[in-house]
Image (cartoon, rainbow, N blue to C red):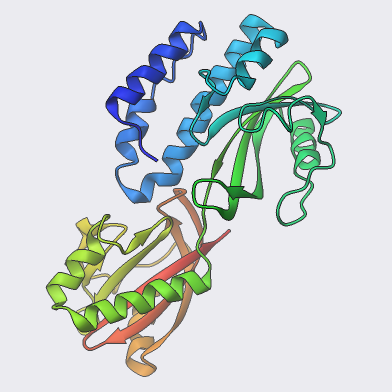
Length: 299
């Protein structure tokens, strides 16, 4: 989800009118960053952080009664699309929940579990007991796409209350990576190479999805033909490039493509969605004189 200029202006003005004093100062920058799909998760984290900071400031300035009422207001400044504030106390009682204020706010939710059976409220309270600020992860239904996805909740402890704002961090799995690779292979076979490579490198070309993207490397010259994560690298010889652990990952991919035509190469790489170095598992498939690759990340 991206914010238009008019929507952004309205949001900042509404927050300022509420007297928060922290009017999401970097939201515009996050909107610009989010224009590149590799920055989606960072943009979401930035928005969640800013809303959390604004909520904490509002709570400290105005007290619990006024703050909880504001957080629970579905038309207020603390609910914007998938971003909302929720607050629990040390006993697991939920005082506010802008995303589900009618069924959750005003109830003890200490035993609430996520879609995988994880005791998310207990985990949140345990994390807050160790550190006054931080984050927890769990699996939850994303109402925007009706899929169970990983959700990260950032939290800040204030006077015995844990104030949180969450955002979804979809992660592709092996099956999804294979499906995208198969689609890219079919696309390359049925189109001119330049057309296919341009689509693979285009963030809006249909081959960049959350933390997944397609890349193409020449088997003979080792040069990028396409890269959905970094199209500016097209034409670069990557054969001598190493990952954070010193592995010559691209040479391994080329050797595998020559020997078997397809397979998987494991290494560590920066996830363009999270900006963190993570384990990556790339599925490759040879098509003529190039190899196509699609990877998925695991923490």
